[in-house]
Amino acid sequence: MTTETPEDFARHNARSKRIAAARERMQARRTLERGLLIVHTGNGKGKSSSAFGMAIRSIGWGMKVAILQYVKGKWETGERNFFEAYPDLATFEVMGEGFTWDTQDRELDIAAARAAWERSKAMILDPGIEFVILDELNIVLRDDTLPIAEIVAFLKDRPLTKHICITGRGAKPELLEIADLVTDFTEVKHPYNAGFKAQKGVEF
Image (cartoon, rainbow, N blue to C red; front, side, top):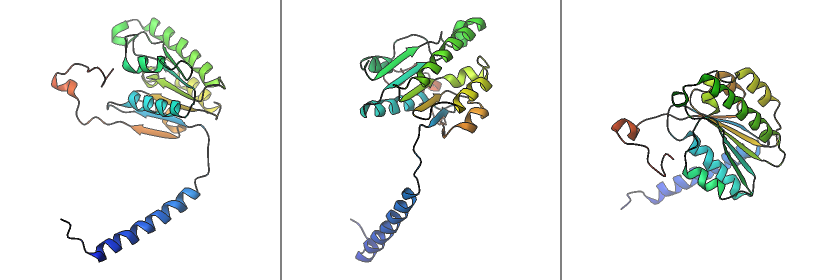
């Protein structure tokens, strides 16, 4: 049972009204609207998952989404199965050859990354696509498989009619500088470190 008095409730309600009024004033000053450049980075799990969540939200609004995966191999994943079920609203392309420790072929990695970047540019320039996810592009840039200066120059001059989300650990400072929204995912605890293998529906 609560020990709060009618005076406590009155003070709480009055404070809530002041907060609501302040937030309304703050919202009134936010008038910009354009496509955002979003970066998900950090060592924690959930960077791609969060991006896919935004993609689902966009599809819920009838927006056309394009997802391109740079590094992850061509194995079956739940997100790929989901988005491929909505071909009218989602394009899901896997252009990576797998992680570098799997391919063990630097020349192949560079060629795959270059092909993926050319496809990414086409997606970004396509006026029919409203949200583009470049999954694990940060990994490619971190390893200097693609030149960061080229990617930053293109993104600076990108069409401002769509949102772009770039995921992966180790985002370069040059990319963070031009981004509108940056989230650093921090790992607190991960089952892998306790001996668990990747779990279907949680990690793929």
